[in-house]
Length: 396
Ligand SMILES: *Cc1c(COP(=O)(O)O)cnc(C)c1O
View 1 (cartoon, protein in one colour):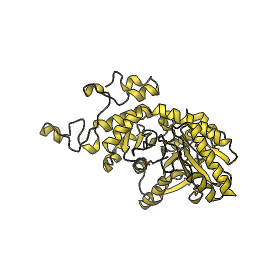
View 2: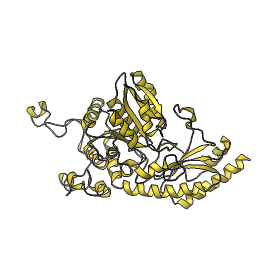
View 3: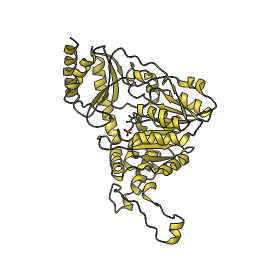
């Protein structure tokens, strides 16, 4: 224990919780950080202890002091009843989906969902007899019209992957609760710091720790927090799969946790500077940043969220693909690659028109997604300014 307890920290602020949660210096000779426990075998002192599994830890897959530290810290920060870890964000999503579904069920999934989640629903879940119906992310309480006696789960993600629609979580959660339907939220963008999921009625919330918890593009990790109604079932699913993350990754995530609020706040500040600058460019038709009025659902973001992160999208004025390539290929500071939330700024082109089924996503021009890092924003602007010049000359 630090000198505070989880109970005593309830009245303390989230920054204090981030510093103190999940640490036990005096159980480890006073050293500040929980060490990396590596291991499969855990020894039991006696026959009786072994037979009754009488030990705080029993085997590597079911938990170590390192994994327990991250789980308990995340539970506290999320306002959950418990948390399980997974070796990636996508693995965490599949754990949540498999916890609450069985053959014969229907699930409702937002049309703006992270695409690998969609792939999982359309292949493995479908083969296992669970059918997926996609819904308009902006549906709000209108989701009630889509419910059937077979509806078991509503999957939400806000803002939407790439296209940034903000969902009315309280409205959707209220409908689900009324009908006893489980809600799962991919909360990666906001993290529990900007959107405490369970306070808004969500049953299970997923975080890709790969993003802001890591903050350095050097690990893969997923977390699922659950309320009291769903945590026992979630823990059971976790134990059945034994899909545990590696101890170094958990250690790095704990390390990242301590400074996550600072990094997130800076990502928000830098992201807003860049989003506002992009909004003023003639090459940009629309900025899809939840904190700007041009984003669908902006008013709901303002009502429900306490902040933004550094990830947003823009729609460019119509131009040929080769012009977009000219813009992107010559950038020297922005990297091109998947994932986000690291210290380095990234940009990727995207096009959700091809796979949406419940809604039509029809931007007038090509779309780009930015993850703004920790560089000097004047340098980032100059890099993009030169890119826009290349775009213009490639348009002819
Ligand atoms: C990246 C991401 C994931 C998956 O995380 P991985 O660790 O890369 O598997 C899930 N949801 C969202 C919204 C993401 O951006």
